[in-house]
Length: 345
Image (cartoon, rainbow, N blue to C red):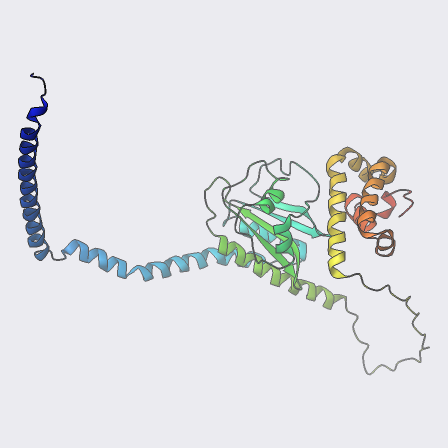
């Protein structure tokens, strides 16, 4: 191969120019031929029988949707029948979980007491569940659900993680939490999740059952009150003269604590008590069986109470006993005798 000489550059440029011009003409001719072929084919394009059949099938899709809705209603009917047979509020709660079982992979119900969520019953979780005991301090997003700021939680987050932790070490990929209400107040939380599946199959049906159960709670409570109401005496029977005894005067009630301050105080009390239960489970369990919680956890309880008083003041605790009541309800099973000789009890 001969060496390149600068004197040959003009000849090389001329050859390149002619070659590029020829390639451009060939590309233009090919493009014009392709466009002409495409336009001719487009003019002969007409819908065939196959596409017409597909369009007809698509037009009939509302019928398929109606059939699907009818099938969902048919699946919901046995669940509603099961709820309708409840004879008491506790029976209703168990029936609610049974009714949810065909619709979701796993479900659990948590009773709310003093703002803490305590596991009541569950379906579909591991046989040894719950793995941990104790009440759950609701995170912020669960507090919003409890207070009625949101109607449901349809996402995984701190609320789901806090509730599922006492039952299982496995978190599903899809979950929902619904409030169970009585007289416009959230009294329980219903958790459902997809288990090993990717998605909840019937989240709206599950929500509908919880709403029905909420309505039935009020109905069962009204029936119980009606039975306990004393029957009026028969009008035909003469009433004996009775001595009118004045009712004792009730002591003057303290002024109500501001609702925002009370809510904050109750939240702090639940957190402090929850920490005691979390870090000293053996002593708490011993107090459950033997009593004398203060004797077992004197230093811890005094530190927790000091933290509460530092935040809200001694007068608030003496007058409203928020911290003391939380201790009794959650560490003493509601039995003040199990607290022991606490000087502030």
